[in-house]
Figure 1 (tube, one colour):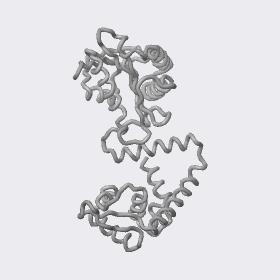
Figure 2: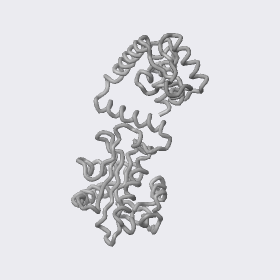
Figure 3: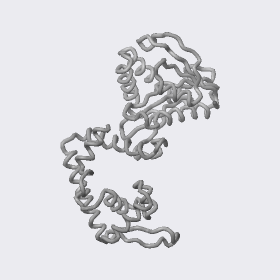
Figure 4: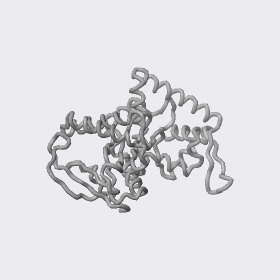
Length: 306
């Protein structure tokens, strides 16, 4: 990722003196763009957005004003603040920058398929927002990410595929495991209309980022069963797993289940961290073969309202 980022910076000309075909510094070009988009309106917000010190913002604003690209006037509400806006020359420059950027982007993407372009778009959105959210839930900040409850066309196949691909690559699980996930989730979806059962799935467009299900019937005695928790490797580290477990445990509490149980196996440390963060505790572990490969199977339990 770092190598790819350096390559992008070089190829898009960010290391050159003028950015986007201009004679301006990168911070000046970004200022023109953000003012044109209406992202910021004053010098203080501009400094926060571009991560610049107050003195640097003052010099930047002064130069752009002297060049006739922006207009600076006092804020009628807060006299200590200065409102920034583009002049006509600034708007003309923005149009030139936009045209340059579009041509540059099209020349790169025209050689790719529509599927590749869609994957690049989704990946860049997630990556950019993950840099700025600093631990906030990704779905609170990333445009296009949606968490859906219940059945959605294709969810059974997508969940089974994510499970099969991940566990085959990392733990050599085979056809027994894939069949088990697909068949048992198919049976569960036949009962999804029962209000004690639910599935939460996170998507960007049609791509599944993660999913988890709560089965309120199969264990009985007011015990819910957390099943088929999976996060797409492309979205790991983005907060998707934490959000899904949040929703699952809230559902269990809202429906007054006395406890929630899940079965997993030793070695899935990231998942275990999430379970324990949401008050699941290890209740039992023993060697087992239920997924087709011998592992140390683990049972975790969470009590209501924990």
